[in-house]
Image 1 (cartoon, one colour):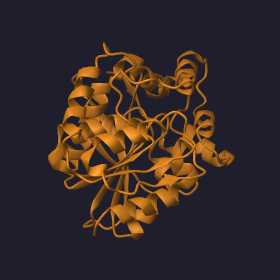
Image 2: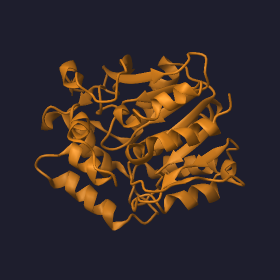
Image 3: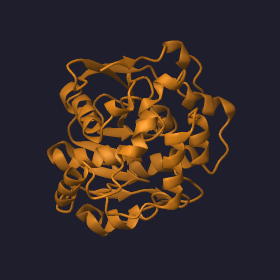
Image 4: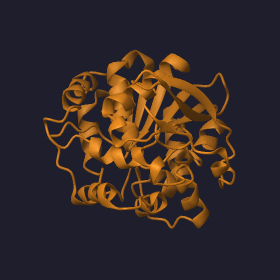
Length: 301
């Protein structure tokens, strides 16, 4: 599998993100390996919160969440998915499959970092990956925070806004990452923040991951990920770990998923689930500190 590695100088001026990356190697499913990056904050002996981003962002998305969690005594770890951030970037869209992304994150979290008693904070594709991991390795997870995410099996209705996004990512000649992130926010991002989202992608050769991910969301029941996601739902519907649904009020793409999760996951029952007002799809940009405070209250110390 051929991959590219973003030059480090692309990350030399990231506003509000002082974190130094750490790296692990994971198998690339083609006989080689890929380097995955993550950043961490908070005491080494604190309860672990694993922060997973989605399309087309990277761990920079959690820059206002990390210090709040650390200040609450939590060990917060934000991962860059393969193809994003400082992680290696396979160059072919076909290199990216749903199953491979689940395995890459599993390998980082369990084989390399040996994380246990984990609180998962999952957003967007971080949920499509992370909820699979909770279902397939429930012994590793203590609790779940779902933030503007879900676990589709191909049976769910996808809103028109998502179909438009999927079509744009597939057909546009030049994929403007910063513009797509801005489109998912209600607040106006400063130019230097938009540039930070562009930083991992010096040119179009680096963007196979962002190009691939919308096409990997199951939209029919014959999708290759449907059987595994259905199996995951069967486990999650019995999983007793505490669940917090922290969705925004301004995301047309995922708003229908919050009641499904609250209704289907036993650990969500009888709990007051916050709605973060005035926030769009990327609620970490619009309401990152509020999200962090909700997570900190949810995680026992």
